[in-house]
Image (tube, rainbow, N blue to C red; front, side, top):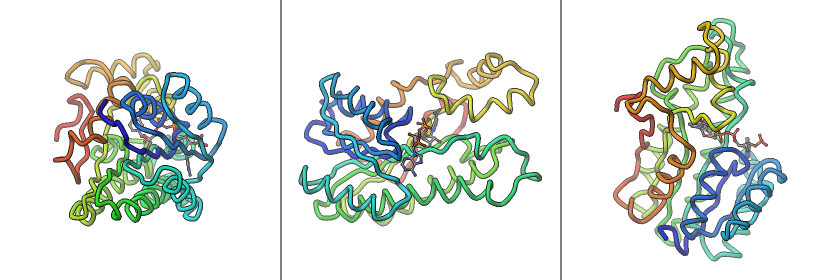
Length: 263
Ligand SMILES: NC(=O)c1ccc[n+]([C@@H]2O[C@H](COP(=O)([O-])OP(=O)(O)OC[C@H]3O[C@@H](n4cnc5c(N)ncnc54)[C@H](OP(=O)(O)O)[C@@H]3O)[C@@H](O)[C@H]2O)c1
């Protein structure tokens, strides 16, 4: 078990990435504290983890609420006597931020992903780091997409938001790694099992004159393996990165695009 005796907090745990990471972390022995904006979704994930034999507690925490994030993490420390892993899986619906050409985009729609993604990740990371320094160990993690590094049309402020998360990962690591805290990100290619994929790319499929199936095939054809990654594959890498086996990795984003984006 790669995460035996580890205490992990997942933010945005009710979503696709959060759920998959929760299952994988629990399978590897971590004790989970799952959080999200809507309790019912987080509870469903916690129930799934527990019914598979894992340990998970659910809580309603808005990752943009500084006090709520802090209060929750303190409650975790009070119960579990520490925190080893903080995983940011927060995501906002693509329908609010994608599909409009930049020349037609209003400032609010452009800024929303940048402020939401950067601020929630910052709050999660800062709150975790303040607790982790006491033990001089811990891992802070996030998930980004290849929009951080590619000019993808009709994605508004989403690419800048992903680039901000990746930059923040490096800055956090530069400050925290000397204190024993690693900071790493995962950059998966689009994952077909998630609703997010359709939200992110359906408009582009329509504009390109492709059916949704044709568009997915075209995305897959850009990978070396000619297929898109599964949630389980992404989560297995998350387990490794969270584990002590990855002690040599910090200040970096793992490229999980299966060759569609060169390093
Ligand atoms: N899915 C993919 O193919 C893919 C690939 C690469 C990277 N990613 C990245 O991974 C992250 C998660 O993606 P996903 O596919 O899992 O999205 P998702 O299924 O939409 O899940 C996102 C979760 O974040 C929660 N959330 C939103 N705002 C929050 C807040 N202020 N506080 C707490 N929780 C909040 C949502 O809760 P509500 O339902 O209450 O809004 C939802 O449960 C995103 O950053 C995305 O860019 C996804």
